[in-house]
Length: 321
Image (cartoon, rainbow, N blue to C red; front, side):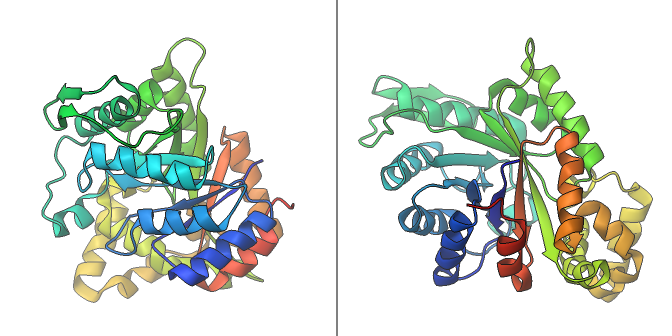
């Protein structure tokens, strides 16, 4: 199985470059950067990774369709393709309500915006100029792009919910499924993508973000992931709803967090629950869990390590040179 390595807004650029180079030596297929919070942007990170590696694919997982225009995104990735020919992937998603609200954006019509954004990016890359589109949310008015990739860049949708999966099955070159989803979700998502794609099923790559902590015991690793999982379940309700956890349980978590902060939720997230939604424990246990996801239809696990265990994940879970 191919394996990717992902970064959630960190580490700082010098450490990011060193980690990307180490991951390439360890045989990782691809390097991915996510803009899920108000932290380091993906364009800066991907540029640094593109210029400091020579074989791995470089992709966003994801940037959202609200805070950057389609034309700017298209020419940005065209320029990235100059830095890493044949290695660049554009991963876009609808984003999440919390971080978008901090930037003044309502989380409205996410799937319609996603469809229009993807069509406009592709038109900027390939349509004869001047390029015009008159969508409800994305408009181009006689655009004359001066930078274009030599061939269309693979465009992945980073999605979670059923309507977004249907959209991806219809228009995406690949997908990156969200983190903290169990293998049962992966199987359901793969089936939904196949149905949406029609005859022959979905032919693109199916990847999935996975938060991972490698340690000598499950308990030690779960303790490092628990705060991240708690924050995800409390602050990203639209994504938490797809994890398979009961709505009443999720509501209880959020009530605990309101009254006592995230730490008040930790006792409701035992090791066994954390290990269902993340890869935690020794290397062998993590590899066994990866096989479960592979059996569920996953092509590319993208490992997002907890910061304390980044080096061990690269050494212990890399496919090898």
